[in-house]
Image (cartoon, rainbow, N blue to C red; front, side, top):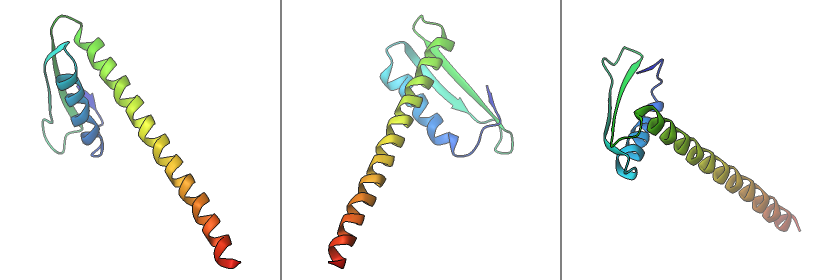
Length: 95
């Protein structure tokens, strides 16, 4: 059970469940439920094919974190490249 969840975390949680179930041969079922919209809790269920559920969930969380870091670094690089190209175009416009 996760406590003090935040709304935007649901998207990550959905993807985490997808990572667990769709991509892991160690998982036979995964899902989550929110007991009540005003309750800051999320119940997660992971049924594995033999490995400890905590280990599988931890691995999926680490994979999700790596993906988020990759997306962030790719985005930051694209913004930086855009600013550099825009600065180059501004110099050309002045001349």
